[in-house]
Image (tube, rainbow, N blue to C red; front, top):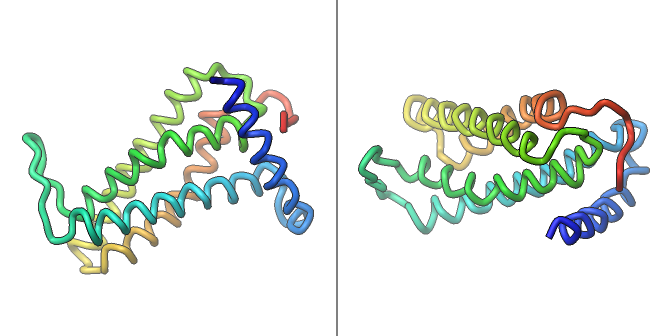
Length: 169
């Protein structure tokens, strides 16, 4: 399975790296890969959020025994469940492929950062939707922008530390 993931990642890297020369004066390769991979994962997250919010949870409250989720909160949770594993794959195999940490440590650290990001996203979404009365889709789009900047720095310097500057793709 690991070999299959690595082959898929190498293919993704080759495609992404074809476009890097257009941006190499502005962005280093790793940052460019993060923007492309993160952008794809963010788009997926927003798409899942939109579909859940508009069609699955619209105007409903999802009452679990421990918490009642409003439509925007339930949509955020489902979106997270889709984007977490895909984001980890992109981070581990495409963006930070030169990290010297063990996979289980990377996964745990990635999860910690993602859970913090989820909490931050949830908090900002609650404020924007329930206090400031923004539309949920606009609020989610806005919070995603803020969380992405923090996430890149945290993932690069914590989840996927590197002791050398080389990439495997």
